[in-house]
Length: 405
Ligand SMILES: Cc1cc2nc3c(=O)[nH]c(=O)nc-3n(C[C@H](O)[C@H](O)[C@H](O)COP(=O)(O)OP(=O)(O)OC[C@H]3O[C@@H](n4cnc5c(N)ncnc54)[C@H](O)[C@@H]3O)c2cc1C
Image 1: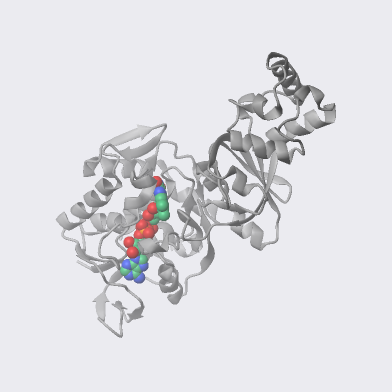
Image 2: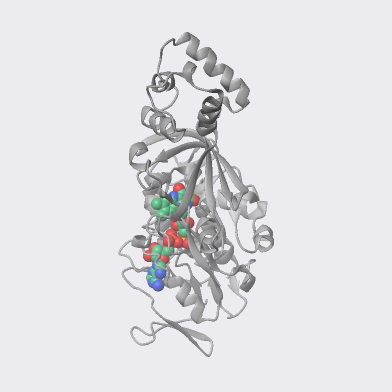
C-alpha cells in the first residue's frame, strides 16, 4: 500500500480519495475547516453536478485534441454510476442534474462520508505551502510538519472564488515541479461595460438572443435571460460568452455584444417589423413610443432603447421618418454594447488555463514530468460551460486518477 496525499478536499480531491483508498493509504489535506466549501455554493446552493448533454463543445482547453481523447463515454457512464452508487437521486431539469434534495450540501456530505468510510484520513485546517521530492518520497511542508508520502495528487482547484480556498496556490505547487501553467483567466463571469445608460437599466432582466463579437467576428451565440446591471451584464448566457473575453482584451481586441431584445420576433425581417409596428400604432392610436412598448419590454429598458435610438419617449410612431423607424428597430434588434472587462476571479465560477494537458497522462492524470505526481480538477487546463460541466470534469478526472493511481 502506497501512502498517498491529496492536496485539496474539494470536488476532485474527495472523488479521487474514494477510489484511491481501495488500494492505498490516503490522506486529504484541506486548508479550510470544512471540505468542499465550493461545492456547497454551486448552482446557487443546489449543485448542478452533471449534464445529460455531454457534447464535447461544452468543454474547453488549449489542447482540445488531448481533452477529446479523455472525454469518452466510458468515463461519463462511470461518473453517473459513481453518483448512483453513492445514493444520490438526481432531479433532472432540462438535462441539468441536481440532487433531489436540491441542496448542494447533500453532495458534499455524501462524498466526505464515503471517503471516511473507506478509511481516508482527512486533515483540515492545514495549508500545504511547499512540496519537495527527495529520492522517491514527497515531503510536504518540509520546513514545518515534514510529512512524507509516496504519491501526491494535486487537487487544489483554480483561482476562481478564492474565498472558498482555491486562490491559485495549486499553480505554484505544480510550477515548482516544472509544470507549465497556461495563464488563468476568469470565466463564467459577469461582463463589464462603460456606457452612460447602465444606471438607467440596472435591475432589469430581459429575454434576449445575444452574440459575442470579437474584432468583427461572431464567436458565439446564446439565447436566454440576461440581467442588466450598473456595471454591465450578467446571467447564464453572459457567463457562457465570457470565456475568451479577458484574453482577447489583453490582446487589444475590441469586443462587443450584439443583443436582440426582440427574440420573439427573430424570424421577422426589418420590413416585417416595420409593418408590425405600423399595425400596432393603428390599434394603439395616439400612443407615445414608451406606451407602445409597454407590455413588450421592461419599461426601464424601453426608455434606454428609445434614447439610444436618438428618439424621445413622447414621440409618436406615425410621426417618425422611415429612417428613424428603421433605426429604432435596429436598436431593438441589434443593440451594440462594448465590453471593457470581466469581473474579477472573486466573482468567477471557473478559470480558463491551468496546468497544460500536454504534460499530463490523461489515463491516470499522472504528471509526465514527475513520477507519482498527479494533477486533477480545475487546476488543469480544462473548463466547461455553465450547466454542470466544471464539476463534471472534477468528478471525471478524480475518478480516472483515483482508480488508476
Ligand atoms: C459560485 C460558484 C458556482 C458554481 N456552480 C457550479 C455548478 O452549478 N456546476 C458546476 O459544474 N460547476 C460549478 N462551479 C464550478 C465548480 O465548483 C468547480 O469547477 C469545482 O469545484 C472544481 O473542483 P476542484 O476539486 O478542482 O476544486 P475546488 O472545489 O476549488 O477544491 C479545491 C480545494 O483545495 C483546497 N486547497 C487548495 N490549495 C490547498 C493547499 N495548498 N493546501 C490545502 N488545501 C488546499 C481548497 O480549500 C479547496 O477546498 C461553481 C463555482 C462557483 C464559484
